[in-house]
Image 1 (tube, rainbow, N blue to C red):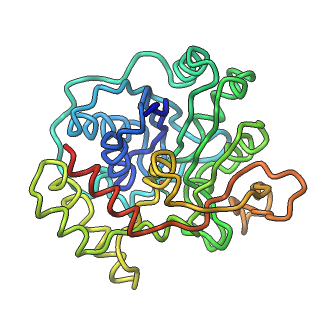
Image 2: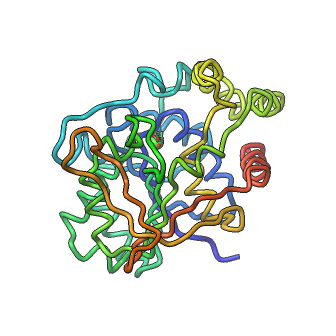
Length: 305
Ligand code: RIB
Ligand code: CA
């Protein structure tokens, strides 16, 4: 099986950590680089969090630091959901290695050129890094196969009534990517809300009693409790969706649409407009997920360590 060369851009919080552990357990993916950004928590925390999770996975994937703040707005974190440490209070050993010296935009461009248009980028945090890379290297779109991103919504937000967090955190960056001409696959809340684990699913995983499953149980507890109190069925693994789509596209379905972002109105700032009747669609928008299939593939990946 030909592996998919993949670069992951993340703001390692709880579901980013879950996604990184699943991704490194999916045989179809060849993860060639990872970059970090300020999002759920600041870059100074999301970077060591990423290194700690990779260490738990036994992965030596190079990690490159990216932007500490959005393109042109103030930085807002999501620590109310992910905890001040970004990992829900779960404790992992200090990373034995450091991030690479090179900034992510230089490393991504060099990697994309070396792979001659075969590189896929998955973004699972605010799009600041990819937008910054486009500013530094305007010809980057020629060397990327596609961008698969977790972000936005066709039907209401989770950060405001209108905007999903990754887009609200840096709306201009998503608009820049939407305008770039790079083939896009969007994983909106409409679909990622189906990618949840119940308390029972988490207990099943914890029963395996491995370092990876113990970490997932420990990092999920507080957020799971908050979600259950709010009447949600479990903890959504939003960030695993782009990576699972690449490895198991058969678990997803969607439609092409024209995607754009509200940048002016302060009330609806960060709202994603998803026009399924657009004359020129710029994205495949994934709307449906086979949840049992998703769960089975994610559990298999997590139990492969
Ligand atoms: O809205 C969900 C997204 O916001 C996920 O990427 C989660 O990690 C947070 O960044
Ligand atoms: Ca994220």
